[in-house]
Image 1 (cartoon, rainbow, N blue to C red):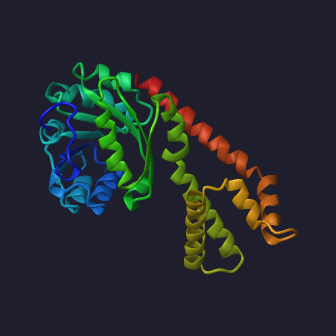
Image 2 (image 1 turned 90 degrees about the vertical axis):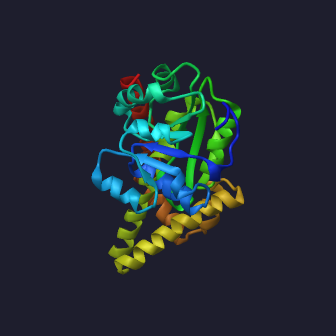
Image 3 (image 1 turned 90 degrees about the horizontal axis):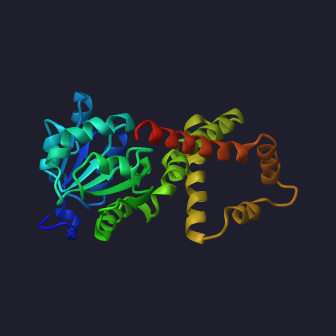
Amino acid sequence: MDGAGESLPTKDLLVGFIGAGKMAFAMSRGFLRAGLVKANNITVSDPSPQIRQEFKELGVNIAEDNREVVNRSQLIVLSVKPNVVKPVLKEVSSVISKHNIVVSIAAGVKLATIEELLPTGTRVVRVMPNTPVLVQAGAAVVAPGSSADPRDSELVVELLRSVGMCEQGNEKLLDAVTGLSGSGPAYAFAAIEAMADGGVKMGLPRDLAIKLAAQTMLGAAKMVVETGKHPGQLKDEVCSPAGTTISAIHVLEKNGFRGSLIDAVEAATTRARELGQQNA
């Protein structure tokens, strides 16, 4: 970038990932599939040779260390575990400049914690994405730091909207976002597996049961998003009087289905808050 806060076309953007875990892989592959960022404009670092090899297969650049990622990038995605954020930021702080945007996807780690470890005025944006960015179906919320230019947030939103939905919000929302959409794919995978198990129990072949369960979940989600109807209304529209679906819903209610999901979101949110306190 030629100046702080200056907008840049995403295809010319130099993106670096410090930490090359599953989310970094999903985001990299998602950006590439969307044609938003060129492979030779992405640089990643990770201590694991196996992980580095997986990224090599995407055609991106592999850095020798984290400082090289910063030196070769304009937008730097901090995609390490929360307990590693502090040592990594201390390592790269001296090579971070006002021309960099630092994007953190570390669960629970507050903007203030990140900003304290970087040079004054560093442009920081905190994001909570989820792994379906891999298939252009992610869900993310972006919260800007105190020195971030509005165009910085807009750039990050543009990147993430290329691989799903993305909204801007206040940082205070991000722990709950983590509990709902950040961890949510795992809840959906568990539901798909359980529905498929039910199909197998009732005589369906395993492969067919999984396909039916996954497509049913996908279709239901699309109906919520595309019709704008409340999910309760859509559920009611499937439940015919004295029919099969209302009988099934009765069983789910008796077994605490909705309460269990609410508890799951609460537990993940609470854990995100704990991670923030532990890594403050």
